[in-house]
Length: 466
Picture 1 (cartoon, rainbow, N blue to C red):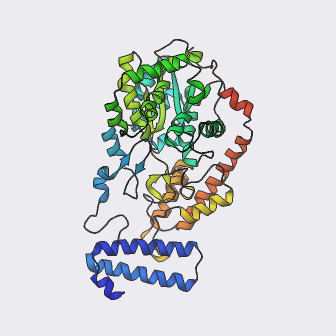
Picture 2: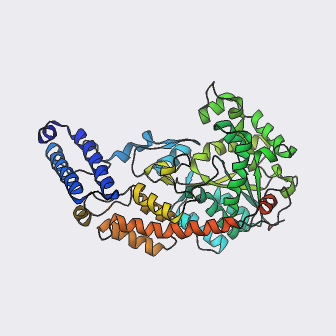
Picture 3: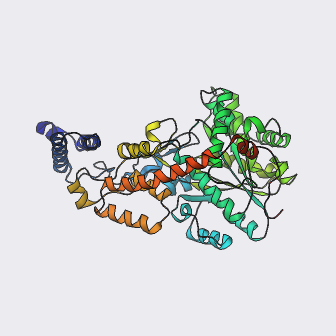
């Protein structure tokens, strides 16, 4: 092995160290014998010494030799569209560069303060911590609100599976807060038609998932008097006004445009090509005559993850050409997979996700076994150099779900200094997630089929500024 290390390049050693580090963590997680762990750690340390000899610098996670700041060109490596989120950086997507690329505006302290003044409420932790980080025309929405003019909220869910995961809760947790503090109506689109077109599902399966997912959404606590949830497969066939808006949008977007925006190819079905207009239509108030009558001028605010922005860039381009106001948007960051922030959590990968149906034991086991760590490879190194919160998934999850800002900051300082070990950080996360999911499960049990039917029945809603 010593001869092999001597002949290896710095880059080869870099990858060997990363692989051996993963092996050490796997052995510890699997409770391997002390001798086996010690042998693996000894090899890891010798690889690091060989790396220092070969490169003249200490090994650093996410910093290959000759490329000490890989995040600097991450924009070229980040891939974001409505179906795929991928980056090579362990820190995740570079959101500042994504703002520039998408042409949106950063949610700065001034805007957060203005929201606080307008609502009289402390900003949600997602705003305080930059989880909702980008916007389009939020100041215009606040202008309307301050002048007693109406606006409404629109968000949605693509029901691809019966069980939702914790990442799916992010837009709904925030949308509920917006509904509460602004006291405005909300429409929630369940794109069961989209999932039928994109996934290997029958129409009955995708519609069934929409109904089941609606139960989880309702369990977030939305006000039934101010919330309309609808399945595309149900609503579009029963609402001429909604379908008329879909057709208007389709007339004003060419095939070349949707190919450029969404990457469609000649082999994609015509259903996929036409779908973006269906996701755009709820942005216009007269798509819901039972709520807004024939009004076409009610401003729409859409909280969503930024991967959905291409749909609404298209919508905003079309809106003035068909006589409607442009929808405003609030963009969130992505909720990372357990294995790391290089991609978002996905319901299609059970080991990357914590589901809303998971037991306390499943949550504990998934976090302990799969949550990517920013800790060092040995306790001694961790105590000396500390952990890296920028890449540690457990810490990232706490920024989403731990309400106490002071406690979160203490955890960050303790982990970064080495006073807190990876196992202790994971324990903090487990103690937050277990009751959060248990309480959600209890609320969901109370959501009957009758309650779902009431939420999904087109009807008049009650809200201010009528």
